[in-house]
Structure formats: structure tokens, C-alpha cells
Image (cartoon, rainbow, N blue to C red; front, side, top):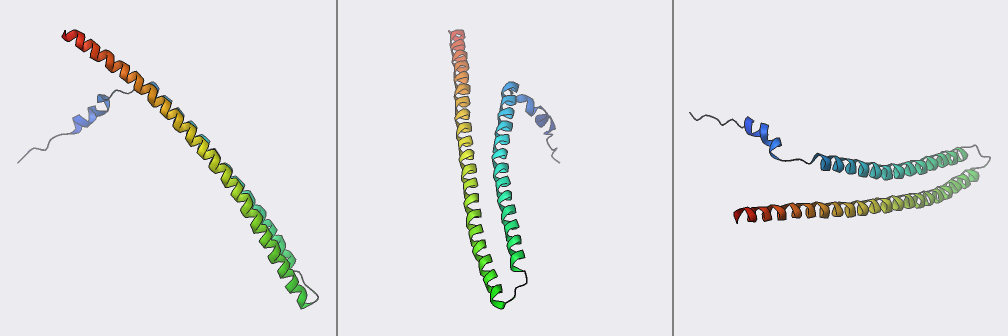
Length: 149
């Protein structure tokens, strides 16, 4: 019967087989945390504005329903109250949608600006890293060529 190969030693040593630049890893961690903080702030601000709009709309709706539910001397007065409530709700919905649209546009603009600036920074970091790597490789090739000569 064939003996199963033990892969535990391979996987135990695997993480140590790759060099890790701890400073670069820490820098990447900090940049990611800062980005997440900024992005979360944008999202939470938008959610806060949406909550405020919803709260205002709910309060106005309940106040309008209070007015509609009052006793009226004549039947036609009830119809009049319902029509007024409907008109007020239409205006309230229009105002709420406009306010939410503005809040979402602002959040979208801020998020886009954040993503663009982060992308530019990442590209700059990548170029710096590539330049450093190219310098090291060039030096190593030169050294190997001199040793071979």
C-alpha cells in the first residue's frame, strides 16, 4: 500500500519562504484603514441625511393625518381635508426626493473624489516600488555579469 505524503512540513515553512517588507505591509494596512474610514464617513453621512429626511417626512405625515382625523361639521369638510392632505403629501414627497437626491449626489461626488485620489496614490506607490525593484535587479545583473567576467 502506498504511503501518503506528509505535506505539513511544506505548508509549515511556506510563509517563511516569501520575504515580507514589514514597513510596506504596515503602510498598506494604514492606507487601507484610512481609506475605509473616509469611505465609511461618506456613507454614514449620506445615511444620516436620509434618516433626517425620513424623520421629517414621517412627522409631517402624522401631523397631516391628525388634521384629517379631526371631527368636521359637514361631510364635504372631510373631503376637503383629505384633498389638502393629499396635496401636502405630494409637496412633501417632492421635497423629500429633492433633498435625498442632493444628499446622494454629494455622497457620490465625495466617493468618486476619494476613489480617484486613492487610485492616483496607488499608481504613484506602484511606480516607486517598480523603480526600486528595477534598480535592485539592474544592480544584481551587473554584479552577476562582473562576477562571470
